[in-house]
Length: 134
Image (cartoon, rainbow, N blue to C red; front, side, top):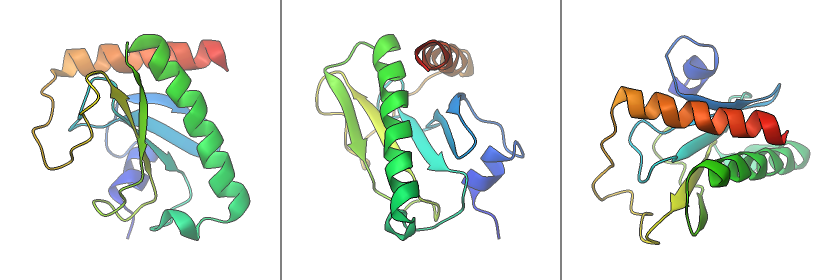
């Protein structure tokens, strides 16, 4: 059975895409911890990130670095936090979280409430920055 992320990658479920290449897909988290909170997923459906082969795992991190630079160009922050939590969806993924105050990484805390218009605008700006930088 396909994970929700596979359905997002295939366009069966809508998302706020911020970057994509032939192997990876990045989109805004719909329950963000901060503005610009992005999920980076491999298109290959693998549950546990460390089950990816070494080359693919390395490429996932390089792609995530490119996405983080695009996020940084759009969202003023101290830095981009990187989290591999991996228990919420059985599909390997990396959270890229802009650290504005520095205390945003709390998955049990309140989530940021953004309108669909705000999410679409943030995604558009990050995607534009990603395309310019790559």
